[in-house]
Image (cartoon, rainbow, N blue to C red):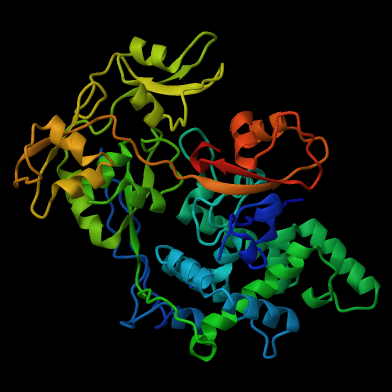
Length: 509
């Protein structure tokens, strides 16, 4: 039996009724999207892979009529909403309406992804209400992580993700890949739809609770002389509320003026394009070439777990449409090595991060950044990426500074923000006496500049047999941190159902 765990939400208590309970107890999640204009049926050309910096510029995932927003397209594709909404649905609708800030947050968070998901659902003939499902699953946060180790927009646990072809290794986690996980979620939902006699509400409930569990509840309903439809089933609280929450969101999107809510203007056109690479490249190099902040690139490409794209390519990166031409030009004209050859190193007894850095002539900060380490603590057998000593270090290698040529429109503060480094350090590294920079000027960027860690808060409910050691190990954090975050003592006895707050870096999970 396949069981897909759901994401709950790391949100404040008053919002918990709107957030998947799985995040508060056993998962991590959040919340909704708007629209206009039907899609046309024009297919994109398949992407081509170019050598070294293989680039593809599909004509867009979709060509559409010129209409202002995505919401009407979603409304036009509704298939689930009943004529008369059950009381369970109206109750959640009222709860959402009492939290307009929450709605505004999740609708806006959907901006980069909802057009693509809507398009894919439309192509498959599936209900477009499902474009709102990531609100319930992950609050449209691609880095959402649950206490049951479900991740991504669609909250796949490792076993279900693997079954549906989502690869997971040291370099890449397909459960966080927006394109791959959307395809997997659609395949899973279509399978459940067929399994449960073409009933989408039952398919959605099974997506949440697992097909075996739901099949038993349907059999119990029918044995009691009931219909066996979703509304007749006795379900655990999370699944009982799962479908009503989706239908409540769909009703709000359908009638925003009636309910006095403002849906953000999200254009009815692709937000990103796919670019294929057949050689590894540093993500910071891609970000600079596309004039993106590393965090912006990472938000669209959360599947990459290291600072390089994986070595066993080709791999797809997603780039905002308005930046893709700039990046394609950079890649097409780039005739120098774009990655530093690396190899894996297994930590042995007595190793320290500083000692490994010294032996391999790199900075400790580079090792931490490349391997996404939050501290210098190592464990025996842990795999680290280190430079291959047989290969020359490229420009930007640790031990040198990255060099950046100023272009029109650049400011010192903008460059500092782009490289996530203090302006004072930029001035000091380049002997600048003011903040003025000129076009064509070459600046040395401190190589220890690191990308910020994307921390997520998870609520975990203690189970029988749990200990601080077991919980800390399960989330890859220190026992002392769990103690500090929750204001408890090492000697305290954990109680079943006790709620603990844990901060994790989802890239390390």
